[in-house]
Image (cartoon, rainbow, N blue to C red; front, side, top):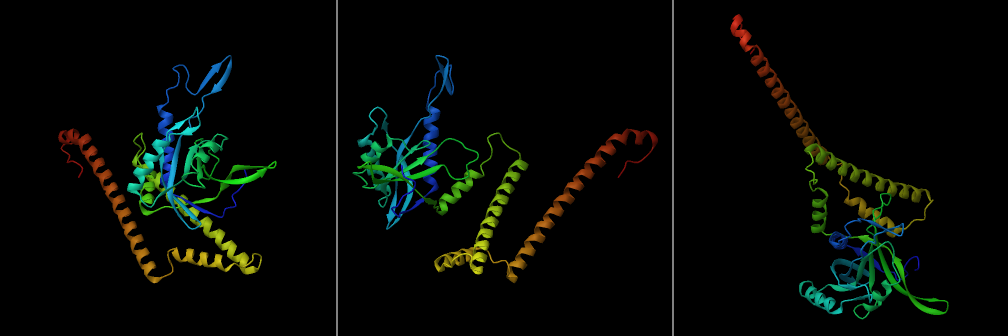
Length: 315
C-alpha cells in the first residue's frame, strides 16, 4: 500500500457517513452472541485468544463535481465472508431505491471497519469497478485510542503500480476534510448535549456545557495564533509570499466577529449588565429564602418558651 494518493482529487466527508458506519458496527457487535462462558476472550489449550471484532460493509454515495468528491450518505450491504463477495442483487435493489429519493447521488465506493486495509478488501473493491471505475474505500477504525486526536477514518483510492515487473492494483491513502450542512451541525450539536444516561445533575450538565465552550474558544485562539505567526513570518520574509493563501486568510478573518465597533461595545455592555443584574437578583432571592427559613426555625423553636415567659416571637 502506497503512502499517499497522486490523483489530485479533493474529498469532502459528511458526518452522517461516520455516524452511519459507527451505528452499523455497534448494532452488529451488540447482536453477536458469544459463548456463555466467554465474553471477550477464550482459552484454547491453555492459550488465550481474543474474540475477533466483527467487520461491517456498505456503500458510500454522493456527488463528484470536477476534481471534488463529496460523500453525503451511505447504506449497508450484505457480505458473504466465505466467498469474499457482496450480495449483488441486494446492492442493485438498494441502489435503485436510493436513486428514487436522491437522483443526483451516485455510488462513489464502499466502506468497512478495521484497523487497516486487508488483502481480501481488494476483491470487494474490484467487484465494484463495474459500477464506478475508480471507487473509493472508507475505512473506520472502531478501536478506541485515547491518545489519538484525529478521526479514526481513512479514505483509500486504488492505483495501478508496477511491482516486481507485474502491474498490481493497490490502496493508497487520500486526505479529506469534514464538510457539514446546517441540518448536520444541529444534529451533531444535539447529540453532544444529550443528557447522560445516569440522569446527571444540572451542575454536571452546566459544567460539561461550559467545558465545551471553553474548548471551542481555546481551539479558535490556537488557530488564530497559527495564522498570526504565519503572517508575521511572511511579513519578515522568512516565509515566501503566496497571494492565493493571503486571500483565503483575508476571507477567513472577515468571518470573525468585529469587536471593535461602537455598536458591539454598547450591545456587549448591555448584555453584560443584564447578566450581572440577573445574577445579583438570584443571589438576593437565595439570601432572602435562607433568611426566611432561619426566622421560621427560630420562631418555631422559641414559640413555646415565648408563651410561657410572656415574650413575643421574633419578627
